[in-house]
Length: 249
Image (cartoon, rainbow, N blue to C red; front, side):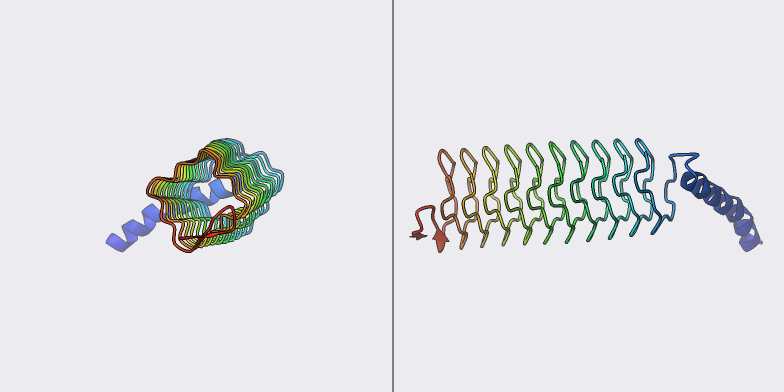
């Protein structure tokens, strides 16, 4: 009896979800919370303000799509194509973006706290004033990304490539940057208090006025880096290559 009742209740729910999915794919609605849309093609679709909270979007194609202000918290975008997509002000808190492609994507002021970008490819993407607190960006390709004013407090960027990235006034306090590539990166005024920069390559990086108080710079390469007016109180130097090429201590 209980099983029959459960089946009777489940049937209309399943039908409603199927109808919602069909309506979303047909463009009749912008709401499809929890839907399974893996592998679907939304190239150049206008999904501004769409609600896809908790949806399965693995390997979906959102190339050049408009997702400004979209609700995407907790979605699975593993291996999805988001190249050139506009995700400004979108909510992607806790989303999975492992190995996703975000070349040239716009994520200005997006909420990305706790999102997982492990091994994501997002060169030249824009994250101006985005919230990436405690996000996971391990081994991500972030070359020439724009992260000015972004919040990356407590984020894990170990092994990430940030060559020539713009991180002016970014907040990286307590962030893990072990083994990160920061060659030619602009970190003017960035906050890196207690950040882990062990074995980081900051060749020719601009750290003018940056706050590196208590940062771990063991075995980091700071050759030709600009440390003018940088705060280094309590920073750890061990086999660190300094701007003039000498090793400290």
